Structure formats: structure tokens, C-alpha cells
Image (cartoon, rainbow, N blue to C red; front, side, top):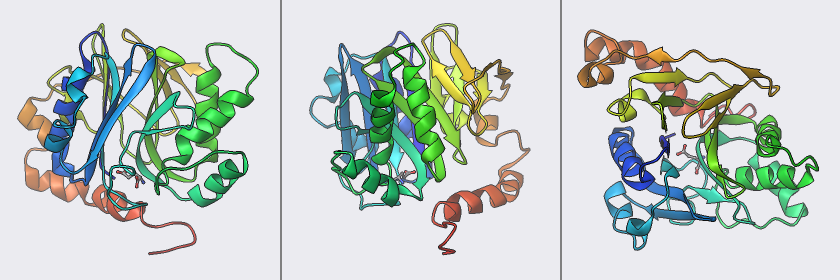
Amino acid sequence: MCGIVGYIGNKKAKPILINGLTRLEYRGYDSAGIATIENDDISVIKNKGRVAELEKVPGIDTLEGTIGIAHTRWATHGKPSNENSHPHMDNSKHFAVVHNGIIENYHELRDFLQNNGYTFYSETDTEVIPNLIHYYYEKDTNNDELRILRAVQSTCNNLKGSFALEIISSYMKDKMIVVRKDSPLVIGKTATENYISSDIPAILSYTKDFYLLNDFEYVVLSRTSAEFYDANLKKFNKRLENINWSASAAEKEGFADFMLKEIFEQPKSIRETIGSRLTEDRKM
Ligand code: GLU
């Protein structure tokens, strides 16, 4: 499990995403990628290797979009390669997804989707997610503003394992959807922007106001708002927390020193390191 960054606002997303990925580098990773909404389409640029190499990929400097998602990958399914890097898109190229975590039942979901005409281009567990979203989106005959959110909810209800997800769509050009289960994800808010990240220090230079997400809280983000929905898609209000840490205190996440932080982090570190490699039927 590595890192996720996202941005929705009025600035160019690419430099913010790259900056966030660089700040998450300490988590370790094997590949990196970003996707932005450019006019009517989604542009994806991804690469095996370091964030510094991603920045050299031709075309990355032409990205002008103000909404984007980004990822550093630590491969759990499929080798580190350009094809297996995130973001992943569905076959119709209307949905792009970054995912931290592991989908334990991806074999079965992949078979289901292949039987329904979908093709897979990577070896990852993740690629089932954008295609399932597309599948549920197409099945839904109710074309209201929650149609994509319902497709995301139906998809998540079918996923076994852990996930932090950012989803953008060319059907929803001014919004982004995020959700998590057993993988970290926070949202930093300003009046005109939302920043998303796997952890607070990566985006603390932009804002001190954060939503700390719990499992299965679906968030529809626009530039100026964050709307929260519970697992049944019932809307609720979420408290914005003011994180009053300096940058160096943020690295210590409120602990007096790094030693204490590391001691208290041990259960979480162990859970996040081996948890994604265990499944219900395979105990290591
Ligand atoms: N399981 C996904 C993959 O192998 C995501 C890994 C991650 O969390 O970086 O592509």
C-alpha cells in the first residue's frame, strides 16, 4: 500500500499532485501516475519508477486540468510496469481510478466482467474497479445526479479487501468521488479547493482544515464543497477538524518525539504491511 493524492480547485492540478506524491515518497513505491480532466476527456500519464521519472514523461507538461488524481504504487498484484501502474480506466475510458489496498476477490469479479464483454489490459486487482463502476453505471436507468455515486457504491459493496479510492469521470467534469475501507484517506479543505491524500503531512502546507474519513463514507467533492454520504447513500454532515500542527509536528503526528510515534504506530504499521497480503482463506 502506497500513496494517493488528489486535487480539485482552480489551480493547475499537475504541480500539486506531483508535489504531494513527492511528499509521500517516504512510504516507498515502485511506480507512479496521474490523471487529470482535460476539456472533455481524461488524460492518464503513468510510469514504472520514480516520481522524478514520471515528470519527464512526454505530455505531462501539457496537462492544464484543475481536477486530478495521483498514485504511487507498491505492487501487490502484477509486476511493477507501465501497464500495471495507476490510474486505471474502464474500457469506455469514461472513468479513472487510483487505488491503495488489495481486492481479494478480484479473480471472481474479473471473470464476471469478462463474461459481460470487458477486456483487461493489466495484471492488477485494481482494474476491476473502474470497469465495475462502468457496468453499474450502464445498468442504472435513473439518470439523476447520484447515478455515478450509486455505481461506485454498488462496486464497493462487491469488493472484498481494502481500498482507498479516488474516482474521476468525464461524465462528471466538475467533481470527484472518494471512499475508503481499511486504507488511509483524508481530505484537506479550503474555501475553493479540496486536497486529498493518504496522510495529513503531504498536504498540510495547503490547509489546516481536514475531514478524517471513516470506512464507507462516500464523499462527492466539488471545488467548493464536500458532500458526505453513508454506506446507504444517506447524506450526513461531517465535522471539519482543525489540525494545528507545524510541519515538523505534523511529521510526528501529535507525538512528543519520533520514538513515541513509532512505538504507537507499530500495530497500524504491521496491519498495513501484512494485512494487504493476507486473505480470509490464505493466512500468509
Ligand atoms: N493492489 C493494487 C496493485 O497492485 C494497489 C497497490 C497499492 O496499494 O499501491 O496495483
